[in-house]
View 1 (spheres, rainbow, N blue to C red):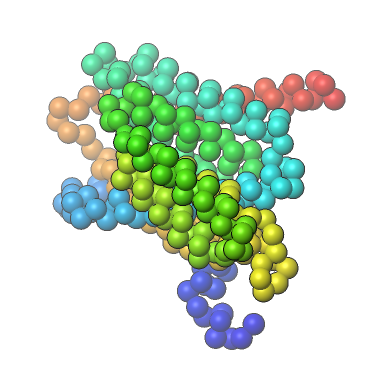
View 2 (view 1 turned 45 degrees about the vertical axis):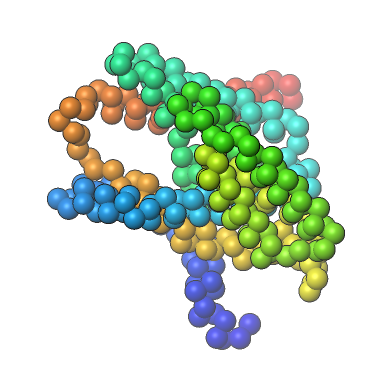
Length: 310
């Protein structure tokens, strides 16, 4: 490889995310920095400026689309290899359902009576953050694939909960347009041997249409990634999906995800005078404890059942 290529931003990010501990630590540092900045005396003005300029929303949507595009590419590859088998999908679905029900139950039982309708917020947690840590910090492929599959089922359930109980009805008329776009891309990618630029462009367009319609952009982006054909590229034997993942992954893991976490965690560690402290505590317990125990319990039970049948 020429020396000049080693100094490109892509090559720098690629070397950075090759060490999983670095990429995971970048997300942790970004989260801590977000809370710190928001808690400073000028934190309210900073958060308000970012919100008013839509910077947070734009960066979040781009990062989520890119991240779930990567998930789609990886799960597509694992499905082709047989690693994403029926039992794995069943376990992931059960874990995701329990991981949504338990936080909601904790919130409803412990929250003040007037705030119990906010249980949708703890179900629809930003699974991309937890999945990013899992993707970057779990060294074994089976565990990573299982967690990513749980992330997809969790996101589907969260989107459904928001659509039905969240008080904001999306424009369902756009749903067939998004489906036709993804299906059309899947056909065209095989028919005309489209490359990475087309996949990224279609994922961005599908995510934009989803946001316009009031849907979460993660699922359309995942669908595009999963629809990328697994075949050799025009210029070599490397499959198209692996080439796209190799080119996009450094930008997502090394730049967009830390920026996403930074902006999403810019929440000051203080309460408004009229905010009950108990509600904050209940929310934290519901999200952290409920999600962790719910998913972990299903995985542990599945492991024990598997050992009993050996």
